Length: 552
Image (cartoon, rainbow, N blue to C red; front, side, top):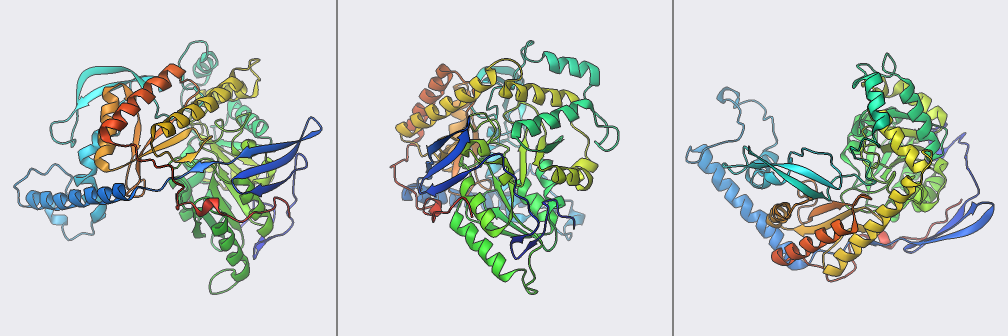
């Protein structure tokens, strides 16, 4: 298999790998603190920034009641299944025909059981139809159900001006003002909506070329390529980078798109504990010492897969330590910046910018335009030979329809604003406002006594709810008070860690945030959600790692 990284890995050793750097960098990782020295305007300065993440442990009584709640729900679920099977209760679920009863089931038994008996009772908290721009506020179409959420009916009423604290509109570029969308409207008139072809055939336009050049310039790398779908950017490109005989080391909380791409690659996959450098180094050391199972041959490539911001935990990757380990064991690093690009760093260039690292220390930079840029699609960026390789071998480049030109223009417009190429400081102001909103919202929730997960700089803010009944009640009550939130439970999270997930935006005003906080405070008292005892969690051993030197 061709090696897009510029060499081969033999027991973890990278041959013919040329290190590229934009400037001298050195540094040291100390417990909970990153201290870096870089060059700026030819003068060295120290970057001293605390790295604070909170994962407070679940109170024992909350865990017990959560398991009890699921247990009772399961017992009643089996009772209702018994009643349905004997015709005592009306069966609204999809069932296979009698002549197919001896076929292999289409659905896994427990998943289907959970969906019809637990999820279905609280399904009204998801898939709510929005009928406006997903800005700081939006409009929701009201719906009701008279069969316990198996079907819904629209009432015709619109719930207007719901405060939106659930969308990934980090920098507020999801907007519809005439002034902001002038260039997008012009491109729509010129190119139309769809490209109706792949990039390699008739779907490549000057807008795609312009966007790719701009992305490379924004990230400070040689080249970039864009794709029409963020999910497919991971799932279709990872299989092009590694294959049989390669080893993938994946964070246990990586996104489904990364997991799918890893599985499709047919490479050997091993997971390490979330953000735990000791766990990662143990796997790297074993990979170098023992090589492939049975044959003991060297791995063709070792690829580390991580995210910039983990969207369910609100945590930020420990990039300096991972880069140190990557260099030490001569592995490759694939960084998914779907949530961190635009939302982190003084210039909005993601977690690399946040830590002041050299972008060339990351072999494959991936990100999406669906969040901070208010558009759609994704990108892969890095060295030119990597991008040229993917243009030929990536399924997403060869077979997928290319990105819509108006979507490309929306991304260009947003990115130019962040870079100051529009002649204003609007982009930088958005980045700073997002950081201010994030710190304010997190601090206030902590003061109220809620258990909040993640890094203090992360705009993704999970609030732990635990019990499935409280998940439903929390979302329903807040919608009645014109606040739209996202709630998440099992199987998307561990069974005792159901949560609400707030996403901050630079377009949120202080008045909006205060309104949301006031309502959350009241609902927290009603539902008794203020579990925090301000104890350090035993969960992330990730705060107790060994120190690593940033340079070999």
